[in-house]
Amino acid sequence: MNQQVNVYYTYCMEKKNWTGDYHKYQRKLADELLNYGLQEMFHVDGTEKRIGKESNGKPFLKGMEQYHFNISNTDGLVVCAVSDMEIGVDAEKKKPFRKGILRKCAGPGEKAYILDAEEKEQQERFFRIWTLKESYIKMTGEGMRIPLNEVEFDIIEEEEDIQIICSKEGKFYQQDEKEYWMSLCTKESANVKWILVNEGR
Image (cartoon, rainbow, N blue to C red; front, side, top):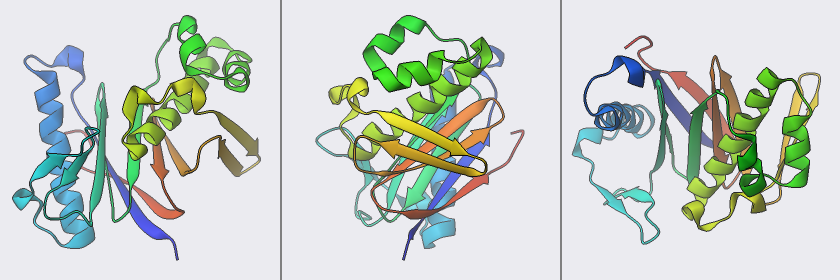
């Protein structure tokens, strides 16, 4: 039976419209999403949580190690995934990117997939691949110790069916949300719900 993963996300002020510490502002929103997710999924008072860090830097809930979470933020969006298994989530705003970065982060098949498209579609494809890679290294907790070009993806689209194949072990899920890509990596197959919280906050 597949385990449940809820991915909570909220739109927020963009950086250009914010005065002050933008990272602190987004961190507060992420904390609120985590509290909400722990309450909704596990009936746990998230305001009582204590967050620690594993030796590799991945955050965990002290005294509630059976629950897992992962957070991502990008300009205008904050995301928090909650589950009872290891997970990693990443979100990125679609925007122009430097083609030179592909040398460090993409394998040959991924480069062809990204560059074999018009400019706008290249942005779509790049951030689709990028967020998948980030979700994987966040799930493992290894971060940038794993070279991104060693985690290769093949995206096969046939009508309504989309297959995401990875050179590493894991299950992958994606949400195309307006001007953002959100990607989730889990150790095992999961039932995934993408839940928008407090739009327009």
